[in-house]
Length: 191
Ligand SMILES: [Fe+2]
Ligand SMILES: [Fe+2]
Image 1: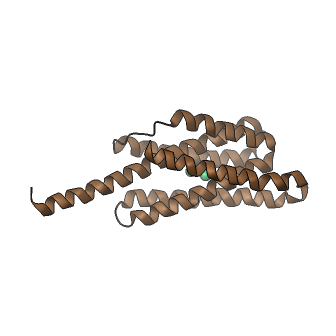
Image 2: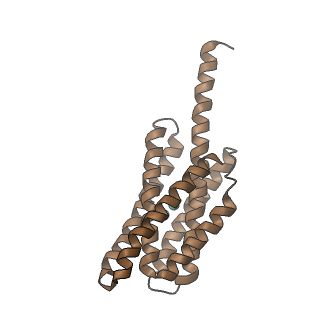
Image 3: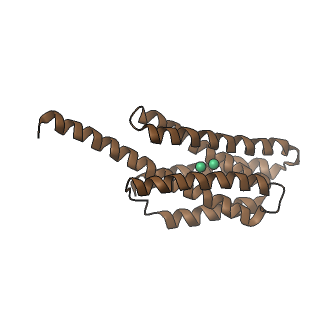
């Protein structure tokens, strides 16, 4: 094989490795997100935020199906950590929902802040290399930003009912959820 051809093949293999990893981690993340909302809905489906959570959950399902399709079409190995994300996501959803509607929404804000940044970084890394994937990531990033602002609006509207305990707990909870989400991203990119 000619040297230039080999180099070209190397570059396209590198790009494929990168995009495969992106799709793997996004597939895992959207699965985790769907599980968080399922957990929250198991507690809050009939509450005042039930429909709001359901609407976001429907969009996450859409996101998940898109990456499901890409995983199959491009023959990408899915993350081996699905069972963990299934349990961790669902548990996080149930626990935050049991803390109350505002805690559930604060959970969404924390997760989406990480995901929004994650999608932004991916979009910038991709450049012109994979227009199909770029388009998906850009669209989903906007959906996640919307989820964040819907949740933030709910929290702000209900701030008057905030007790002192909430004020102490939310920043801590948000920090823990963000750290957990980042760890999940790190692991799912690799395993
Ligand atoms: Fe999503
Ligand atoms: Fe979302």
